[in-house]
Image 1 (cartoon, rainbow, N blue to C red):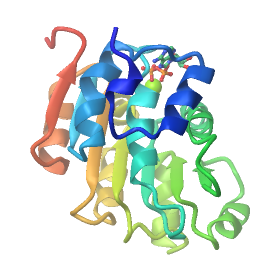
Image 2 (cartoon, helix red, strand yellow):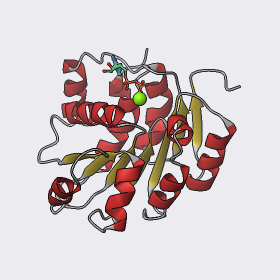
Image 3 (cartoon, rainbow, N blue to C red):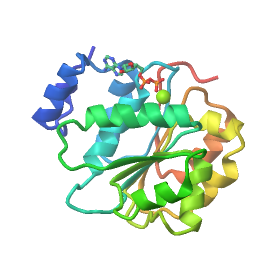
Length: 211
Ligand code: ADP
Ligand code: MG
């Protein structure tokens, strides 16, 4: 069991918040991934569902955000609306002491016009599904030119669901200097290929034996 307080990059307010959330110690994947993530490294992480992957990338995402700059600085891609909503909720809980932060969820099945209105003042963090994110990029309602961190959550499921081309196109809109975090429950060969193409010097962490 490793305490969150060993992560010297986390402010005291976040340590208090984690304690209030009932997060007494890091889960194994958090302990393996967070030191490198908070150092700004690219990380690819494999751990089964329910192992706390959201907070592993979420704490990294929040560290990258400068709330005084009104630009989208982080994008989290998820395979489904349900998962995007769960990620947004967890990010909001983790951001409880981050004043004035704007987090927006963008998924299909919702009116495009209302989403475009919400994008007029750029959110700091966007969480969404690949198809709808790409729609906004094509229509230029979403600007990723100032993106600092890109997260591919449940990357294996996104590939299974046929989002490979959308993911490629979206990543093409992000600056090369970004941090890229890749999370997956399984580690098939095509995820290794995605990592090789889109990450730089990625640290691979796993809480299971990779087959
Ligand atoms: P995954 O993305 O790996 O499936 P989640 O991020 O959804 O897992 O986390 C699963 C559950 O574990 C959530 O209910 C979350 O609140 C909880 N959790 C995450 N990190 C911790 C922690 N360090 N201590 C206690 N509970 C945690
Ligand atoms: Mg998850």
